[in-house]
Length: 338
Image 1 (cartoon, rainbow, N blue to C red):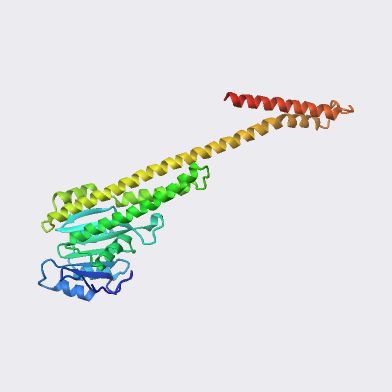
Image 2 (spheres, rainbow, N blue to C red):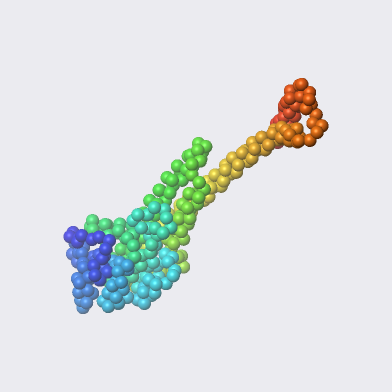
């Protein structure tokens, strides 16, 4: 299969890459001019469809789409509306998908999550994003390596499964981090702050909230799919969403585990603080007799006892030591009773 060298930029029309499926055994790479000519063809071979991927950071992308492709108005509305939740809806016999994914350089930061928009019809698949994403790149690599794609819906299903695989890898990395923190916690070497676990938990919560498909929209689609979607594609779409739900369930379990670790670290920190406070209290109690007697004898007034006695210092020292021993004995006894 001959595929043009593709990077994460785009041509002047905003097209990052394009593929023609169903034209023989090979998948053909398309540029914007070839894609425009194919769309204008009055007749096409049975089973042929194209996939065009656009970079929305290029202002020419929407202009090219509105000029050369007949897309549902709902697709353009989803590009500009505030809701970014993952969903697949049916509008004007077209599947409109909003898919959230992670960037290539994902580093467990909330800002490393971006959105991919898709419009899927019987002959044309349009995908658009503003930043390079992992799942769509995995799908491109699969197409480049010659993996067979028989229909536009199968392309969407492949994308959802690639996204689930990416999410599985993220969960595995997160589990490895949590395992390391848990091992150090059990060994008594707490080197991580609760804020580190909190940041990881917030990212996982955001991933789960954005990537979890909306059940109502998906239920309506699976209940009444478009006539051009094959029954096999409908079943595979249902299976892919179920697999995705399993991954999200594992992510929920990991969040609970992180929460328990946070509570354990907080308990140990409180225990250490209590011990430090107890030691400080003991030191204060033991030093109390010395401070009282030293304060009284340090007053510059007449009549200080033992001031002229030859053994006055020794007598005062014995009194201080005696009071200190008594105070220490009282503190130790109280601690044993507790």
